[in-house]
Structure formats: C-alpha cells, structure tokens
Image 1 (tube, rainbow, N blue to C red):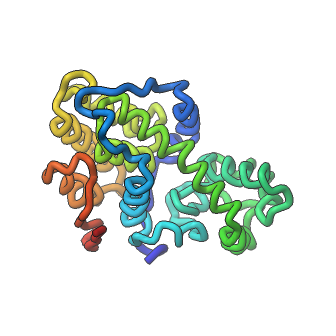
Image 2 (cartoon, rainbow, N blue to C red):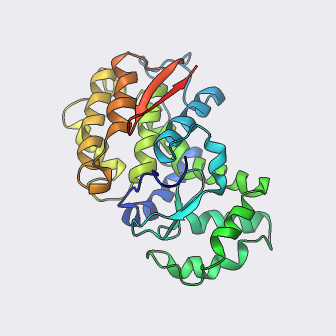
Length: 278
C-alpha cells in the first residue's frame, strides 16, 4: 500500500530546508572520504548498485509499506503533518523546500513541463502547510509528470544529492560499511540535518557521547547501537515517530546478526508487516 499507512515524519519544516547544503558532499566539499581498517577498500558500500537497490526498498517499506519504490514516483498527498504536500520516492514536501528544488530542476531540464507553472506557488508556500496556488490540479499534474522519465530522473538525482550521497560519504568518513551507511541514510530521510536536537547531526553527536566510530578506533557494532539509541530518542520526541519499528525490527535485526555489509537474504518487519529480500 502507498497512502493510508504512510508514516507522517514531523519536524521537516525546520530540518529539510537546511539539509540541501549537504549536497556538496558528493564533490567532497563537506566531508573528506577516508578509508579505515574497519571499512576496507574491498568492502562494498551502499552506493554499489545492488546495495543501493536494497536501500531504496528498505526505506520504501517504512515510508510507503511497499518494496516497490519505483511505484512511488507518482505518490502525492497531504498527510496532515504541517508540511503541505508530501510526494515522490523520498517524500519531497511543498512546505520544506525540497519539492521546490525538485520541480525547479525538472523545469531547468525540461522547460514547459506540466509542473513548471506551479513554481511561483511553490515558492510562496515554502515554509508553510498551505496549498494556495496548488489546488485543485497539482496532485493530478504531479501524477502526470511522474510518467515522464525526465521527472523520474530528477527525483532520483535530488534524492541522491540531498540525502543518499551525503549519508554514504559521512558513513565512509566514520569508517562504516553498508549497514551503517544505510542507517545514516534512513536517519537523514526522516530527520533531515538541521540544527535542532533531533536532526541527523545532533543524533550523531548524541551517539558520540557514548561510543566512537571505527574511524576513531571504536567498535562498529557498539557505535551503531549508540547511534540507533540516539535515533530512537529523537523519534520519541515527536508523537508521529513514536513507532520505532523501522529501527527496532529492521535495522537492529541486521545489526544483531552482524550483517554489517547488508548482505541478502534480509528479513525484517516495519509496523508489524513482514518483508523479505532474497
């Protein structure tokens, strides 16, 4: 299913507007990518195509209750979380800036597309939950645009620039393998990386109070458990995040099994629903 059980991640209004700055990480501007003894050159990172496909399915199981992440290009609804419309493969929001950036990219690449006319409205509603200038036709036009491979590629590229690439780079800097990189990615998707206490950077800082990552000589498993403890704390600060099963019955399952390379087969549950990747 796509809509009714989709998680309503709060807090993006203050966080996602900031996280776009991490896009420069792909070029090495923000994070130096290093190799450590724990994450050897031979280890396959999350940016390996097969591992990345797994990551997309894992996030989709939590965000859309489906492993078919490519079916989410057309997804759009207001989930009542104060961020206006939430849409697409990673939950781009009209109230947080990342949807505006996405539609702008699409329009830069394909002027005159069906969503281009909404750019002025998206600029006006940014930072609010308003639909002014978007209703009633925006959802239908989004679904039309989602049939265009150019729009699908724009969604892929913005997901990578803002969320996926920064998570992988930061994970490598910390000496983490594919599972740790995924744990970072999932946290960025939900929390963004603003300055508030529940943003990604402050989740990481909270974890560092009790454990060190492999790049600093610590145990990878111990550090990831500390990070997940900090992530659960952050999630429980907001009512809509009170179900922490995407951590408890997904990520911790892989960690307890010592599956630091995120190798298949994978079995997990989110919100009580069971999933399998063979």
